[in-house]
Length: 96
Ligand code: SF4
Ligand code: SF4
Image (cartoon, rainbow, N blue to C red; front, side, top):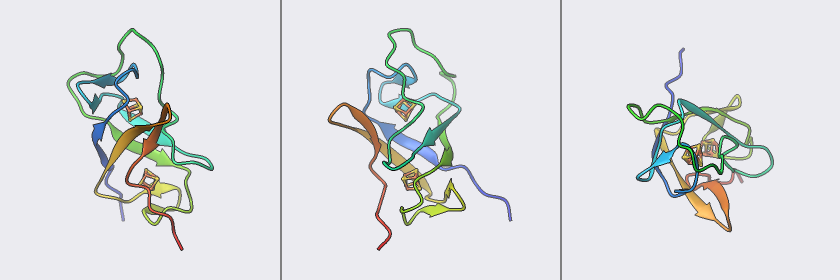
């Protein structure tokens, strides 16, 4: 069964090169590691990405999230926020 890429509904990391008006314009981000942080975040004044499209989650390495299946995100969509200067996936929910 093929997977659908979850869209990034909103991102609060305005200083990220891929962010424009709280939208992510990277084609596909990577989330992850031991914390649910956006690995694609780039603190850069010059803007990048494709302004015509809204970014999605290409891969997620956060295995202890209930939305993670086989190292992919299976949420319908996610939101990213700024937490202590880090771009964190707000949709993360710890698997108990
Ligand atoms: S989701 Fe990640 S790459 Fe996209 S704008 Fe936010 S911090 Fe940047
Ligand atoms: S919701 Fe969970 S699986 Fe999806 S990107 Fe966020 S941390 Fe990864």
